[in-house]
Image 1: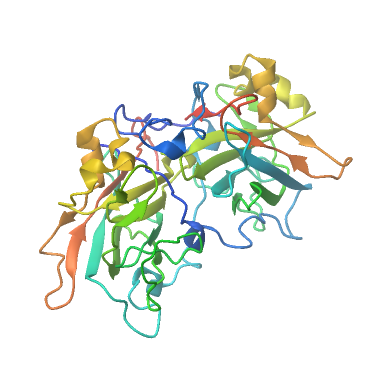
Image 2: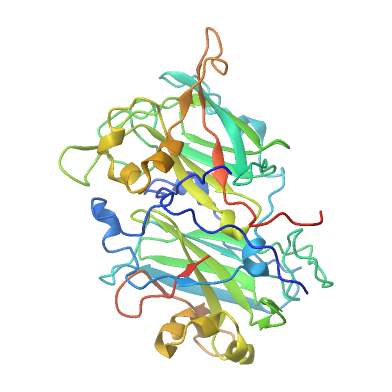
Length: 189
Length: 234
């Protein structure tokens, strides 16, 4: 067996390679499903925004199917949706995505996972990336989600919920706190 | 639906902890709560698939992205992307970035008092072939100072970002050069607990890759996480 190559920090100078305008837009007019906007900030242990973080997201389409050969569900692929996005934070630590609400996907055993978006966080100061998940506040399937169920403390679980602001068509807000009060739940995958 | 075959977990000692005290920037950016261990579901065993459409071959030759040739020691960096089971990882997207020969990035936040090179941007991108092979032509990056501690200098390195076949095979790492005296002093390199694992980040000089009268060759193989068991189909 070959040994894993270690992770190292992305450092402060990745933008000219990894940050492309438009990569934060996952959905077009042709994409099936409910269009949503996601906004958030990345904050350190003192609540200071990170101006040099990079967020990647990976999600299923509106039918709950991933555009990947290992997803062999009998659900339709959407030729206008591939499910990957990336956004560097700006000077005030903000990132945003234009996407669609994903459908539910199967979980372990015969469980169903609530609609969620898989989130990866990179930054200077992070020797390896962190993984979290964005769930949607008010989604009835959250109650039985097998991964949310791993987080027993309701206050901690709440860090995984994106909250809709500005009425029913407003953006979902999802702040990522790396440390300290209301520290976001990160997963060991 | 049957559960997906999971990937192997993080190799003990091979991956840095979130917090490594000598690396000062980590202190306020490392979670204090333990990570929540979760099973691999369809969400983790799938991941973005990249086609060839956004990648052109010239992106793998960093010495031909401008009118003239960049200054510095021309090098070829080549290797294979494999998984822990020794299988090639084809169609993996690799993105690299680096300082120029003087130790300066084109990034606007890099204020190191070293010259920019109008003929060098320091970024490359390619997709591995069917055997997981890749090859970049570039110049050897210079060391540069950073403010982590007194008289701190980063060893020469090239940043590598890789997407393997799934969400959990994502890897961002750095490739170092053999014999660099700054390596033993570097908190980022030393954040990897197992020194044998850390040494996997050091490329090796390779005379076979070296192009006569043209460029020194370095080999750097990258190992991504592999499946825990052999899938029975496909």
